[in-house]
Amino acid sequence: MRKILIGTLFGVLLVIVLSAPAFAALPTRVQVNVNDPSPPNASVTFQFSAAPTAGTGSGFSLEYTGDGGAAWIAATPDAGNIAPNYKFTATMVDFKLYYVRIKDNLADGYKYVDVMPPNNHGHANFSDNTDMCKGCHITHNATQAKLLKGTDTKSLCYTCHSTNTTTGSRYDVQQGRVLLGNATLDPATLKYTVTTATWGKTLGGPFGTEATPRLPDQNLWGVGTTVTSRHDIEGTVSLIPGSTKGTPTVGSLNGSYAGNTMTCISCHNGHDNDGNYRILKSKVWSTDTAVTVKAFPKTGAAGETANYVAGFSVYCALCHDKFDVIAGSGRGTQSVYRHAVDVPLTNYYYTGGTLTTSLPLETGDPGYASPQVTCISCHYAHGTVVTGTNPTYEPNGTNNSTMLKRLPNMQVCEDCHKK
Ligand code: HEC
Ligand code: HEC
Ligand code: HEC
Ligand code: HEC
Ligand code: HEC
Ligand code: HEC
Image 1 (tube, helix red, strand yellow):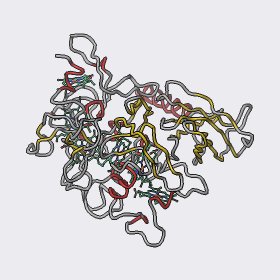
Image 2 (image 1 turned 120 degrees about the vertical axis):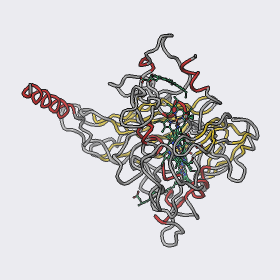
Image 3 (image 1 turned 30 degrees about the horizontal axis):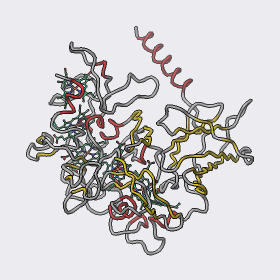
Image 4 (image 1 turned 45 degrees about the horizontal axis):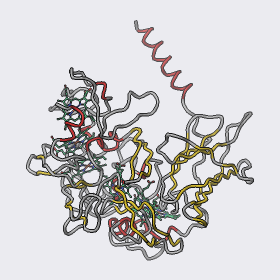
């Protein structure tokens, strides 16, 4: 019996070792340059240096998708595409999101890079002669740690991601909207001039403006709509619901900043350090095991949608770890029953037919049972405008909130269970 067990274990280990993807040959840094000589089409160049796996057919290929990963198109290798320096060019459409994958022809695994014409990324894939650093850093006279500009993180992020329609990003996270076109970008000042405003909804939902969390100037989420709940940016955070991480202490939730509040970089990196979707952090607390979040957003007529692939439950569980419960609502080691995540709809074992839903599911990497339920099937990540509050059971049962729900009242439940 023991021999069989050891044999099996050895076999499993051997399979893991033999099938381990060889990522080593992929480039660590890719320079992406968006040139926009003839809008609405941009010419995008990719440059990197890397040593490919040796052998017949060695080298790299570069493919891109503008539709959330449904179709991948091969980019053209340039004349300068000679090992170990690689160069590719692709024509892309302004205000459309693209994902690019670079593959070592002889090894498994991809390096992913996102491209957002007419802009350069803003946080990653900078060219050697970039001027972008000064958008966020001051070398000798910075007012914040990490040589950052501004008085706090939120105000720095909001210089480009707020209701001001002429700043350096298509994303206005205050109003939960994304610029879909009809704007021109001045590459020198990084400001947009919006001719006819064409906006769509963001995936994260709106944070709202601070004093009154209202959404004043547009009709996407409803004119004058109030944001009814949100992740409270630089508000007072005493406890994280559904968490064993304890009371946030100075620096624990917000990198190197003073105070125990949650801010944009509690969840996002300043840079694309971890290769995660939306530059999401792979670790929040120093003791965390790094997580991978994978998704491919795409631009639609009414805003952005995403092909969510994998990793959201473990990501949200970096803070709300108690709620990351896999299959069955059994109590397990916890003292209460909880709705499962990372389960396919086919797991539902009551009669009444297979579950169907309009809510987003994760499609899963090959090998996962999919599509599967995850935190953002029911919740927005930033904020929501829905009505219908619930009490907080974790930690105390006294605060009522709309809990970042995607749909009003308990409509998220009916969307799947149809009782
Ligand atoms: C859009 C804003 C933004 C731009 C542009 C930007 N940074 Fe940063 N950078 C940040 C933020 C925010 C942090 C702090 C992240 C944290 O503490 O979690 C940071 C941290 C850093 C750090 C320290 C941590 C690390 O990741 O190594 C370095 C070094 C750095 N930036 C260099 C640069 C350089 C060089 C450029 C230009 C190529 C640049 N940054 C452009 C926002 C930016
Ligand atoms: C100097 C302007 C600028 C500042 C300041 C800035 N960003 Fe950005 N950000 C951009 C640009 C440009 C993009 C690329 C998308 C686009 O075209 O707008 C972007 C994209 C993003 C994305 C989407 C990334 C992706 O790959 O999908 C996130 C998330 C983000 N920013 C978060 C932040 C956070 C958090 C801060 C504050 C630490 C911040 N930004 C500050 C300019 C800025
Ligand atoms: C960096 C830690 C952190 C991460 C990561 C995080 N949260 Fe939170 N979350 C908090 C804190 C702190 C609170 C309580 C304060 C507040 O409501 O802003 C909270 C509150 C909530 C609430 C209750 C809101 C309310 O109105 O009471 C929901 C729902 C929620 N989070 C869902 C999520 C989901 C879904 C994800 C993943 C997309 C996520 N959280 C990721 C820290 C985090
Ligand atoms: C609790 C974690 C959390 C906090 C805090 C947070 N974000 Fe995000 N953010 C996310 C997640 C998760 C997504 C992806 C949502 C999706 O695709 O459903 C996202 C998406 C984004 C995007 C892409 C556009 C969109 O909204 O879908 C931008 C830009 C962004 N965040 C900027 C910010 C800025 C600026 C702040 C601070 C004001 C901030 N975020 C605070 C988790 C967070
Ligand atoms: C995205 C689809 C989806 C949504 C939305 C959804 N459920 Fe479920 N639900 C499932 C699946 C799949 C299972 C089976 C989980 C498993 O395998 O353990 C399940 C299981 C259950 C169970 C049975 C648990 C058990 O142990 O027998 C209950 C009760 C339930 N859900 C209630 C709810 C409520 C209440 C809501 C609204 C907050 C909700 N569900 C929203 C898909 C969904
Ligand atoms: C099937 C839909 C659904 C899924 C999946 C889901 N939630 Fe929720 N969540 C809700 C609803 C509905 C509420 C509010 C009502 C309630 O607690 O009964 C809520 C409440 C919360 C709260 C506030 C809880 C409190 O008692 O203070 C947090 C935090 C939260 N969810 C985080 C998460 C995280 C993290 C995940 C993924 C691991 C997740 N949720 C997955 C539907 C869902």
